[in-house]
Length: 108
Image (cartoon, rainbow, N blue to C red; front, top):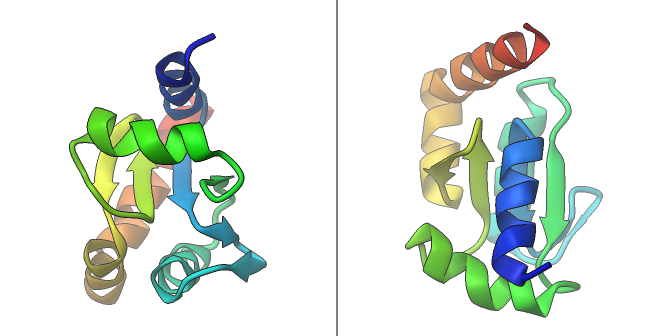
């Protein structure tokens, strides 16, 4: 399976997916840490991929997503954005709504 196929499969199979540096328990950059904190405040489980352990994904995902930086939050197959966008959405309540809606839709 190609790296691109792997990325597409990960995005398709996980309603809430975070590509990040490190893990939620041990983020390896401040932006990933802030994004994890915003996501965890929503109270739902999410999948993650540690791009530091997956150099092929780290190289290919920015081209696929047309988004150059990490972390990257994907919800229901759509790129939401990186740290600044996620933190802003958490602050104004949009992230909670988006996550709650995605979990409800995946339960259907």
